[in-house]
Image (cartoon, rainbow, N blue to C red; front, top):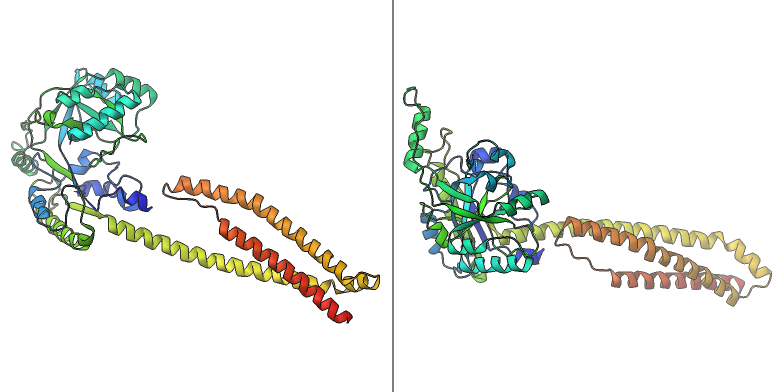
Length: 451
């Protein structure tokens, strides 16, 4: 598992789901996942994510928190990664949205369809766009990356959710128009809440709160990020229940909103990692306490805004080490018990056989069998027994090991199998020595009685 943890940042900071989202079981999937699964892959949508803080100025990692993090001594900002972007409402042509949701495209006769949830737009830097270009060229994919690079298009990213038929529709959707609406301003979001809570029916009347609109982009295509050779471009919260776009810096300037920090991937100097961990934990606790008191926007009375959580690589490493150590102790204890039971049973069978065959040996002696002939006979018997056991070991035993190997590799991607060559050789030698020792012991006993 260590090579998988090396891909993880030392500290991953992201915004929590709203209380409503958590009640639906979203936003905490990472707590029960294996370490090789993306921690920010979720079944939740934009509503469940932003229910308590659905206003345009909201940033999962606030500017105030970012400034405090920059003051921590020990963070290597050159090796750290900030995922920036914004939350928006998508308005796309029916043909463009059809590969993702055909039902949504049929809800209206209008050419443009507005989404019911909030989606994510992530800004890519030049190096990330270049890596996408290489990936698209190597795999000969039908993607319009030129428009993305020039700031005239957006790329829709999904997690292996298109069937072959839907992929054909996605290829036909390239070039379709799409634009974005910003969320309500914080001031309008508070006003909306006041109107919804007002007992005055006239004040409850629906008002059209203004939403700013971006320029119209072209859809560059649908791209599956689950392919094995997809570039290492980490994302914020994403999943099949919401749309996720890649956009260039030039393109984002055409959306009338400020860029926000959606996720932080921080790298710390190894010798200062414990100190950095303590400081980050304190800042996150302080930030979450502050947000819990910000109840002006949430539609649920008394509920504050969603906070921030942090995943520390050192904690994951400690958890896995504890888990593996516990398993080794348990399996080791079981193995020792089985070994002792097997050895006891084997010795019982051998020595019982020795004493039960006394009469047989006496008869053979009486008809003229010499000690040398008896020794050869017992060696032949032990060799036959040895070969039978080794045959079982290298047929049934190997087949069982291969079955365990296949099962574990499918169960745990970080599982590495090694053939137990040294242990097998040790068992073979020990078994051979025991057989020779028992043969010599029997022959010595018979020789002593004869004398």
